[in-house]
Structures are given as C-alpha cells and as structure tokens.
Length: 147
Image: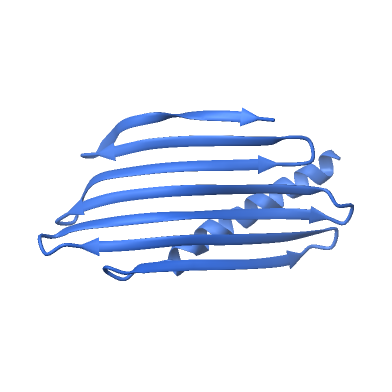
C-alpha cells in the first residue's frame, strides 16, 4: 500500500508541475478579450494511468489611462488510476485578479482551493490573500479539512 501511495504521490506531483508549467504559456489573453483553455491528456505507466485536465479563462483589459486588469479563473485535476481500481488525485480551483497602473502592480487578490484524495481520505486546503503596494496587505486565512 505505501509503495503504491508513494508512486501515486510522485506521479501526481510530476503531473501537477508539468500541468502548471504548461498552462500559463498556453493560456494568454489578448487585450480586451478572454482566452479559454481546456485540455485533457493521459499517459499509461503500466500499473496505473495518469490523466490531467486543465480548464481556465483569462482576460486582460487595458484602459486609455494605462491601467491594466488581469482576471483569471480555472481548475486542474490530475488523477492516477491503478489497475486494481484505486484512485489518487490532486486538484485545485483558483480565482486571481490584479490591477497594474503604468506598469506597476497596484493590487492583486488570489484565492486557491486544493484537494488531495486517496482511497483513505480527502483533504482540502484553502488560501486567500490580497497584495497591495508591494506587500501582502490582507491574508484572509488558510484552512485545512480532511475527511
């Protein structure tokens, strides 16, 4: 059991890193228009199959006065399914917003909910913070729940 958990954790970590590294490069927004990104892919590793799904929407809007806003919403899920039917997964949903004025970051708000599950439990981690004028101004908190 622990060997399987270690394999799944490693595979999920690699899948998640690849997923996050690839998503922003593919999901860019033109000024004033939303860019939608939706992709799923799977790899077979013999004793388990690893599948990842990414869905996101990004929008960039710039005013004549030089203020630019960036809004992003999305989710990802990476799942390892073993031949015996056991499933291990990691996923997250996020919402981000930032406002730039004349090339300088004015404010950013980020909310992230991550979920990790295996046949024994599911844990959810939530974080929310606000960044303004060069520092974190509001950390609304982090919470963890495992069932």
